Length: 362
Image (cartoon, rainbow, N blue to C red; front, side, top):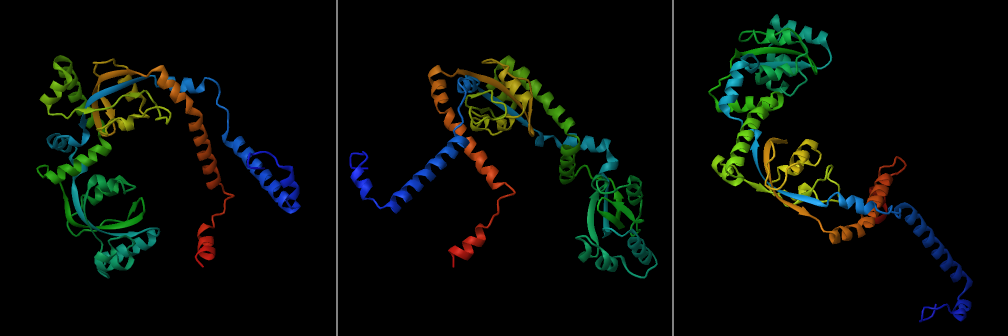
């Protein structure tokens, strides 16, 4: 090739045959790589597909919203719940010896303790296989509901909670093996005047009685909705002492597709950003028109109420521009999928560190 980019026969004839062969091999290899790349990442996008995908985001909505956190469930209602379920909130202080697999050994150890051959503390240090062994088995304070998660037989747990100070339980089966307990402080009812105790019980409720907490805040959210419809959303929020969060406009994008705007990019409060896969929440938001208020929406650990602040229609020009870059997005996805398939293949042998240390660093 000469300076004008044209084939130069004289230069070609003057080039050694070995060099011409080398160039030909390089060109051939490059063409093969390009062909494979084209086959893998150059899939044709069907006509109209891009227009259809982006048309799904033609209408966007922006919202203002308030949120009631489930973590703010009142301690007085927590105390009422605990009072109605006192048995599961009894507290006992125990020491324990755990033997993971051997019941016969556990029975032998218990018998030696009962006969006075060895103290409970000595037996724990010698035989126990849990984290309390070094402390002579001292395990500390437990609620009934905490041990209930470990005991295979509830009657054995009830028997433990009926023991007096220094009494030793039978060998009990737990979810990790076998155990012997000694009562240090007999079971007693939880102090429902103690704030730390109520905090612990509220955490338990969040795991096992979440519905009761959600119902409480849903009722408050409905009352707020009625006030907001009567006097205005912002005014009702101010009166209730609630923070009003705002979102930018975003489309109905179930699943959080990368081709459309996503709520996670639009929500400055960070509370609604988790609704991309929440069909009910998205329906609630996009079923209201500008100025209308949603019903209460459960989002993670919050009950939210939103008002549609604005409805935005994307112009045909913007949709057209988005459609033009659609093939690029598809190519990027194909390359990521190919890379992932190679790196996760069971045929891939990962020797990077061996080669790096053995060949590069030396």
